[in-house]
Image (cartoon, rainbow, N blue to C red; front, side, top):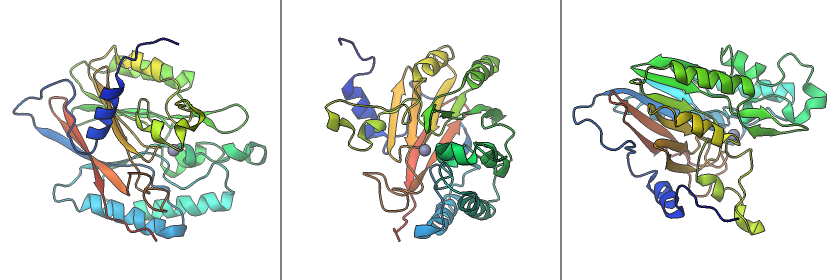
Length: 314
Ligand SMILES: [Zn+2]
């Protein structure tokens, strides 16, 4: 098939390579007298479990973020808060949520949670768990005190949209996409935001990213393959919606346990690694245990950098 990519391969690779080192300055220049209004610590893919020192690792990441000399005002978790609930028993799932709640309990600044695929209970064993009252996203929503797995709110002059990336796939497993109800809600929410108010979007699975190309042995079949579970399958629909609003500034995600930065249609997408590195078993490719610090400014500009917290694999 003959087609022209809107973003060249060179641009993609350059954007990806620049991810860790350079502050992102989409939309060109920022105001010289801009003021920072919010510093966010974005901790994604914590994957807490009793093994491999994960609770201590989670605690170390939080303490590292909270002990920054220039402290974050709030924490965003990016989903996959626990190792896995998709195919786990009630007991195992409870153990993980109890650990998560216990470690988070020590945090005294505001926390905004995102739900990831591994936080969904029982979709991997539907015949066993689908009749349980906490089946699916209910358990995670209850633990995190969320009325719904997606929402939006305003803070410090910015508008925040937290999406629910995990869509139930027929048979078993999941696809990264919004269901019709959530997509309709998103279009309405975007429309309702005054155009001077900058918008930041948080999703567990990237809407647009370069790093899924390097997940697994992607190209071994002789083609690049991006599964619908690795990047939003409805990315085209979502980016078309974003295109209507110049105040959509940045999107942050996790899920891939890799770090990148892609600027597409003037929206910057950051995939922010993983607190758990390679699921607490070491680094995952180039990505070590870490979290991101996201600075937001009153002129709609922002900076995002990945911060390793020095965890040693146990
Ligand atoms: Zn995930």
